[in-house]
Length: 297
Image (cartoon, rainbow, N blue to C red; front, side, top):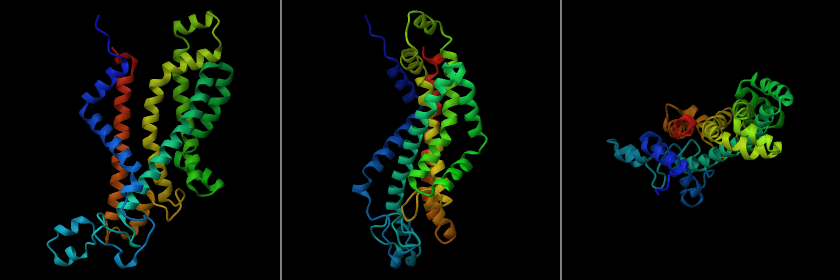
């Protein structure tokens, strides 16, 4: 008898068959691996300054037809330097570690609180109204403004920015999980399990949560993109990762004052943010198609 392939195997096969989604997945894996080994591959201290080589061009200067431009390239600084003579490549790598770490931690914190509140609101009718009205209150604030308000009260730091983004994420997670729980708890197998005497704890965490997991994975993947944009935005506004620590948003903020003199100071971190966010969004969109129960068979 031929063994039927598991759902995970079929989902992986579907993902790899989609060339764009597979490319995004590979790019994200390579990016994560690259950022993990940054301490060993970053060529310079990201905060070390050297006024003698400020605004040094990157490797592209070697292909210039102007001898003066070719001579201005400083060996060992592949992507050039910024206005303080700091290595752009090292700052890009270390800044990526910060952006990705904040994205993962803030998404995980928001997911944890949002899933718990959403499941309680969806499963217990008496808790539904107070929980969701509080979520509606948080929704009245635009996301970035809510994060700025929290940081304004707590002070500017990487931890406070992470906390602000996670709080901003909670209402979205709670609302979507609640809707899924309301649907799942009406299924016949849930009613059968309850009639057999299963406790609410067992039903919620061993049956409802298990069946809501595909949705949670999808919204977590997409929320990663939003979290990375959020920390970059806050750092750009000077309310995220404090200087001189590198972060993609703060690198763009530094480069905006020299956009005509050295446009690569904006382009390089901007492209890094763009590629990462697009890859997470495309991957999340494809996962939504794969994990949709109507498409499993």
